View 1 (tube, helix red, strand yellow):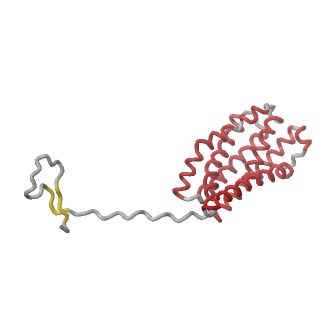
View 2 (spheres, one colour):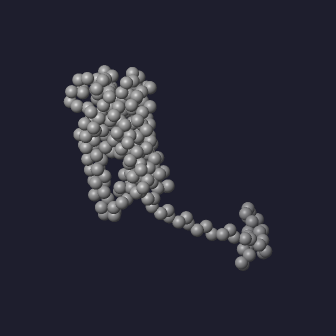
View 3 (cartoon, one colour):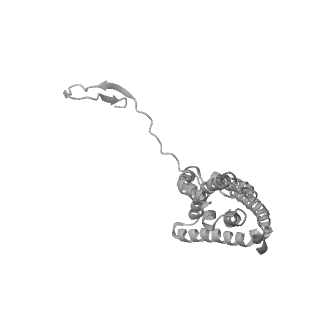
Length: 222
């Protein structure tokens, strides 16, 4: 999933500049909805995973992200950012928000407490390695060469193939999570004492308290 994310988001701004004529600043701003969605929903996704376990979100989230990448096929020949790019960015932003927080928490909790720093480093290294491999390999698999940047139609066709490959990688990530991730056992609920039965309520005999507002009750056991 990290490879799909980095590879596709590397190629999309290039597509927007070469094929659509966006400036570098505008092509980068086109991905701002992704950041906004992550900021708003990631913490909520983490809290949900802490209640129900990470397996469902780590299985569904990559599939949602893959659907967003598949929608980017519209950007290969589209002309409107709102119609052809924004829906795809929104969908794979939702998929990332569903997935990233549970994924990070699962990686961190898989190591003993004294090795949490190592677990975090491994998680970051895997993310960076996946991204580097995708940037190096995904354009080649998609038929995007150095000269493709001089031919907008060739670049658009290559992006179409690249986002489909990214969608397939995300689907594989969701399947892998569904097969290999297990939810931690839930803590047992605290025992609730049975309700006590009362035999009589009222002011105790011989008890003089004129301002007593609540009744005085005796348990059956007493």
